[in-house]
Amino acid sequence: MKIVIPWNELEFTATRSSGAGGQHVNKTNSAVQLRFSVMRSLVLTDYQKHRIIKKLAHRIVGDNEILIRSEEERDQKRNKDKAYEDLNKMINVALIEPKKRVATKPKKSSIQKRLNTKKHNSEIKKGRSGKWD
Image (cartoon, rainbow, N blue to C red; front, side, top):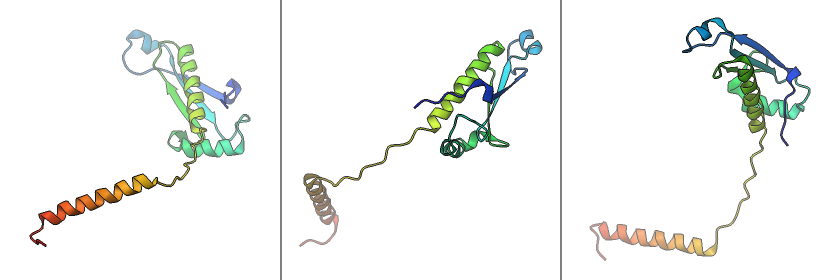
């Protein structure tokens, strides 16, 4: 199940972009900061909220908020869309449940093969020692 966070649960802030770009960078607020409060979300269940907080602990700031900064594009709209896309991708990846490992018994042939290899290696090492039978 893919979760899409509604726009009304997000808070955007426009700031000046850093790095190269000449005069355009110096006079436009093209970089975007997206803030999403996990605990105040109405879309997510309590289980999903706690899973996201646990999985994305390194991305959470302050009051359980995810902060994403996007400044790759030249205009604010595209940076906003990119940040929104990154947030949704991040949340959906955090909510993926890993499959449980099913324990299996080794086959008789693989057990026999392992024992034969051990015996063979033992014989090789015996041959290296100074003792001869």
